[in-house]
Image (cartoon, rainbow, N blue to C red):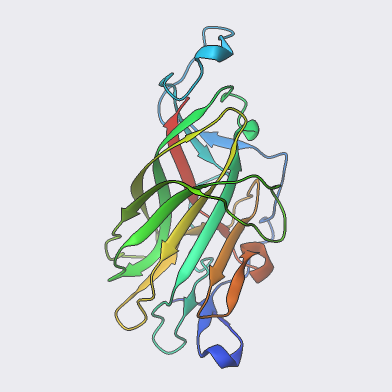
Length: 236
């Protein structure tokens, strides 16, 4: 069952949410990564060869686990049907948070948690440049570096599912970037609720929806809900 966060009445829609657990929060010192495969270092490596073509597989994540907490999602939705309007979610990354990435990083896929979906249609996934600071109350992505799409299937239960979008983008050494998940207005046909977790996040995620009047990207923590499950898979 989707819990809901009422938007201003003028918008006749709602944002789904649930209260975060007491353990949820932002911990700038709690860096977490998940390896796409075994990765062992024989010793110090020459930084000059650690560019996007070095083929060391890695997965960058900003939550300590990828385990979904049902009801912790946020989306602008119709209060009567639960169907969703336009929604965009964001996560900003900086390579300096991942000490194993000493050069550039080539992004190949983006992994996205799904709490619930039905007739979700096409979800667009962008990797954007970013030159600002992390951890602010809002975020303004730069130009699009790479884009892809995914069509989530209908979910079958409350355990959560994962979808993957192929997105190719190169991030320079020490660079920052934003992953942007864009869901269309499907309130007449279905719904899409991104997956979230109550586990600790390293940097905040953000949310916006024109239909709910949230035109400035706002942290999900401001809504008192969970932390977006978005992971970046690539090589360095």
